[in-house]
Length: 365
Ligand code: TRH
Image (cartoon, rainbow, N blue to C red; front, side, top):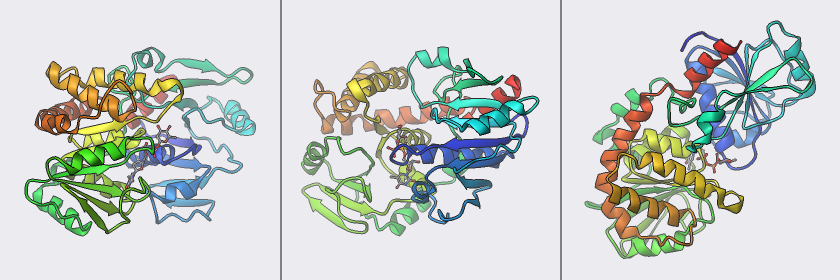
């Protein structure tokens, strides 16, 4: 990372855990890299699901190397980089104070993750403020050198490398997960619209599967600590895990169903096969986003495997033209597993999002 910066990062929680999760993860990575960072979040209660040690009643507190503040009348205190996550609007007096600074801070709008081609043309584009002498720049995470890359904190690769069979066994024992010989271990994190009954029915009549489901994902799964077996399928309820534990669960599974943005990125760092349910959008726009990702992800797969994986993704994401073929998905796993490791290496060769942000901010300031 080029230069150490002071950073204000603003996060407005819209729904679910992704807004808070992405911002927390980025804040932690930038703090690890030596930046002095304040994360202003309007809903610290939501972040508490991920970081149970935080106290939402406090206006300011240290967390994971940065300062967490409730977003309430923020005052600009000279940060060199200001990041508005996902287009959130900064208060006028805060903007006026930014504009009064000489030179003004670099100001970045951190956008949602997408593999679509237009991202490369929009990444880094300036957007002058209509009244103030300030310019905001659009910054896109992504999968290519023409984007900002993905959050990859220091130590992730080493931790993943050091996680072998004994660590996996200890993790699963600690979570009360029993995987019989020859069974597939699958983690499930999805939106309510996912075709779960069809998936569970297919799993129940195929190869033995242990499907672990964090609390709050679906009422079809048993509560944390309990299991339910039907045919070849055992559903096992888990608590909502702390992010670093969730990572290790992703590293441990034969297949991970993930959703939204942040869990999908973690599944890619996990080097394991995954199925991604995108955040549902109006007019099925998420299907275009999904296809754009599949086009990139599937480039180095043999065409038939890429087509079959694409078919399963489409069915899982609600494309009525695709049927959910679980046996085909299981048959693909060895091929996709080898591919997932190649894909992870490709992503790891890109600059990570935190480094790209700091580099970009140093250039535009
Ligand atoms: O919760 P999400 O659906 O968040 C979504 C998306 O970010 C979406 O793009 C955005 O528009 C919307 O929010 C507002 O899914 P996501 O992004 O995977 O975030 C979940 C976070 O929760 C992620 O940081 C992983 C974490 N997690 C845990 O830490 N422990 C767990 O047990 C589980 C299941 C998830």
